[in-house]
Amino acid sequence: MPNILFLNIYYQNFMDQHYQDNPHLASAGSEEQHASLQAAMFGDSDFYSRAMSKLGWSAKDLITNAEKSQRRWAAEFAFNSTSLQDILIEQIRILEPDVIYAQAPWTINKEVYKAIRPVIKLLVGQAGFPIEQYSGAETQFDLFFTTIPENVAKFKEVEIDAYYNPLGFDPRVIEFDLSESEIEYPLTFVGGLTGNHKSRRVFLDLISDHFIIDCWGYGYGELLLKPNIHYHGEIWGRDMFEVLRRSYITLNNHIDTVSDCVGNMRMFESTGCGALLFTDDGSNLDDLFERGNEVIVYENYEHCLELLLEYADKPDERSTIAKAGQRRTLADHTYARRMELVAKVLEAKL
Image 1 (tube, rainbow, N blue to C red):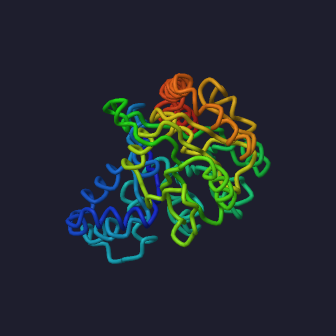
Image 2: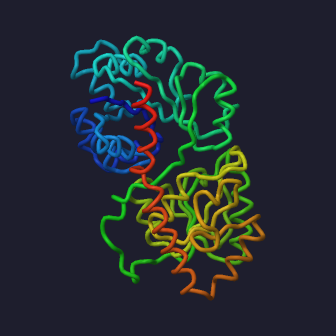
């Protein structure tokens, strides 16, 4: 049975809040800490590894920047170093995976990749940004799976194999049904407002001149928000999915650094949770959703406002589109479907 180890990172703010909400966790064993972090369904959680396991792989995850659980592991294995880099290398040496799949390859020191090369057969990276942002780190990898279609040709220009594989959705986050009365937010936005999201502030300001927007995310702290922007704080994992499930309409806006392609996690999370998605356009959008029938697509911020005003008095049509978007995601955009390509490619290369 081939085995794969996924390397991931979690936002520090999420982990700090998780340990604060679960005060016993810091003194727990490394496996219990790791399982608790995964159960919160932050980011990719165990979505990739679980899907690979169902395809006949032995699959595990490591959260490489989870200091408490990683250092507890070092203590349990009598490993004489508190360096997260050294701990990661030792874990990989012990586990001896056939494949390392780095979800955020630029966050790991190049020396780690050099150190683990003798232990593994394939080094695989996930690329969610244009290739120009990887600063040469990509040359250490055997292949990449990328969420940006144009990256495939660019990787191959530097003689690295690459495959387009969008992000996805795990249906476990909608295990129980919500009644209509539990959908409480007319219009929501979940996302950050940092340096990579400057245009989002302009976007939200414009929409909030006409609608109340319930917002969650990071980077809002020092901003002077307009009265119609109701900020509820940072939100992660299961709590975030619940907000999306309780939203009639949710807005999506890709970060400023991405190319003209679309496909961020929020597209699949929102539609998978049953919210009506209003999203910005992209050259590959028609490969993902049917515009106007499964999602609402805007060309610019003024157009988004026009569409919101248009659909404000069409509750039945909004519901029809939202349900169609959810059906599309559950049929075509699950991690189970995404990992079929990953398993096929990797098995051919091992």
